[in-house]
Figure 1 (cartoon, rainbow, N blue to C red):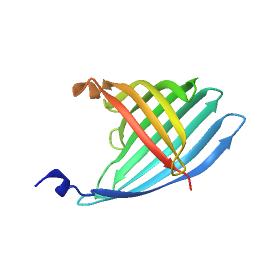
Figure 2 (figure 1 turned 60 degrees about the vertical axis):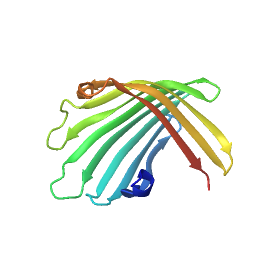
Figure 3 (figure 1 turned 180 degrees about the horizontal axis):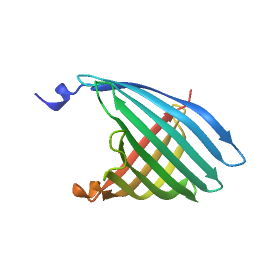
Length: 165
């Protein structure tokens, strides 16, 4: 059987964001993110994030604190983070650093876990056909802590097409 014939959807999710704080004077925004994921032939899960952002002049700093739990009996509440800091460089290009990793669970908080950090470049192409914008992010994140046991790092390329309704 070829791969195309055996491809199927393994999960579907519903997500939403609620803004909880904003200050133009401080260049600060805070929001709560929630996602319910329905997993086919597995345990559904819930993920929440506290989204924090600080923008001032050419600087943009973000910190996401993440909590996730599978809904099958006894699954631990697992914690993680994602952070980035970048500065306007030239035209639509931004240069910075990004990091993400695991913080453990409610049973074992802050173990020797996997973390990645490294340089990134971001850009956005606006007003594309279909009233959309294309965001592009590329970088190399070095493996830290337990992640070094399995890899030296990871090359990343993220493409996001945003539709405006």
